[in-house]
Amino acid sequence: MIPYLHFGPITVPTFGLMVATGLLVASYILQADFLRRAINSDAFLIIGIAGLAGIVGARLYHVLESPADFFADPWPLLISRFGFAWFGGFLGGFAALLILARYEGIPALVMFDACSPAAAVGYAIGRIGCLLSGDGDYGIPTTLPWGMSFPNGVVPTNDRVHPTPLYEFVIWMLIAYVLWVLGNRVLRQNRSAGLVFSAYLVLTGIARFLVETIRLNPRSFFGMSNAQAASVASILFGVVLVLIFIRRGDAAEPQRARK
Image (cartoon, rainbow, N blue to C red; front, top):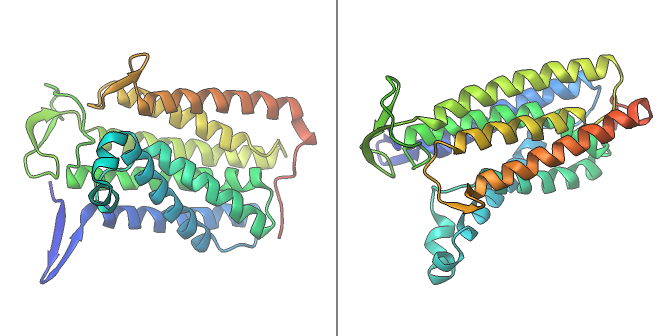
């Protein structure tokens, strides 16, 4: 793997490079979604702010998963280039989007719907950064022909393991496609705002729960990892929202909100 790229005296971590790429691509996707919803807002600014909030949230959530280690020596953990939790990133981005939706005059559910495909793509590309850096997000040992070893990774291993970041890349890109198609249908049928976001919660929750079954993360809640527990919460919340929005039907907020 390639944790760093070297350009003379400049060293660029591949994880950070892929996260930046993911945010850029997500901005273009959100801009396209705004266009089909007739929303006049700056997608690049929104993704930039929400992305930074997500990175901060992901970092804080990760370090607080081991509070004893964090409080014993917090500074090195806070400034490390590696170690981010998906659910913390979701919470940070979610909070930022709530504030941005109010500032931009966009109904919150419409904002969440528009951002869902972009968020899935951004996450998928960011996972390639995990693969390139070998930061420990890989899975358990496997004898499958596509198993990979990470002898030069940030968290090295000589065992052939499941390349779970690659699995997540494929799965999240498929989820993004499904969400985009669902968005077209919701807009065409003038269905309730929030359905795309609800589908995002359910689909990404299921995907992350399944991937965690072959990950190395420690178990805590009822034999589940922290990420699996968060995934269950995401799935349940998404299902509840789907039922609410379907019941609301056409009485919900209009999809084609304008500033």
